[in-house]
Picture (cartoon, helix red, strand yellow):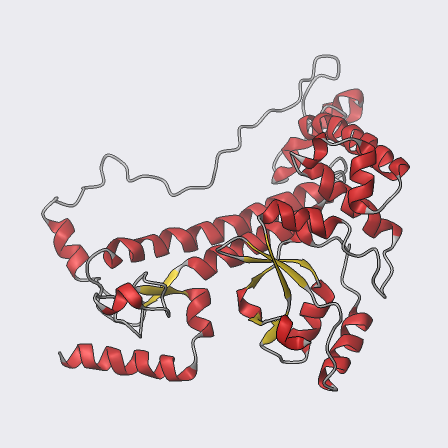
Length: 348
């Protein structure tokens, strides 16, 4: 029976919060499943993934995936279906209807919210969405109304409370109603206007006009001194441009961390509670991990980043380099080979 369902490398299975219809994982359930795996038991039916020719998207089986990881397993047998991300989403919306761990009311509502968050699915009737999610039409109708009301309120709250993004402004539209607060802010109560700020993205300031620029002839020389990957392996050809993106990617990861801090700060103030902070934090953290995982890490230890081996290399998928995420998954023998390759290049 197991031969029907291939064992996929867990590292190759992609997860997305939009496909997770549970509000949170049940730790006890994960522990029970992990114990079952330790006893050699398998799951029937198996987790379901959707293959779009590039990625395996997990549509059903988040608890089982967590159990595999907890049990220290590296592969998981899955039912593979062909389809795009939206196909995986449609399947995931009603995936937990017939499992041993029953859905909570909050789980059902989250499924409806995920459905309404999708541009195409949101156009469907409430009856169709209810059938897709395995819930009542009333729940879909109620959730849709609440989301619309929440969005309307969020617009008013955001306008009135945007100054709390960094806690550096104190006068809001509510403060105008209080003579004491208006006086404390040194603003007349009758004519006080909300302080408006323009929030600019945090970017590096360009050099001032007084800062001397490097001569154009120095640029190639400067590049020649840094034509190596982080492990010191020489870069050639198109890999030079590829590794120049590494700094930009890591900078974006840091910027996302700052964005999370600002959104959390807004959420913590009155008027910001409308924001689904846990979901936003999860998505931004996932984006950080995905960005960091795609940052170039090393010249491919298998092909050396050069043809003719690069054209048929499965380790780097013909890219000539391996990213951070891929490098951490390399077998020890390949990591040793990377060191040996580096030494050979050094001797060369």
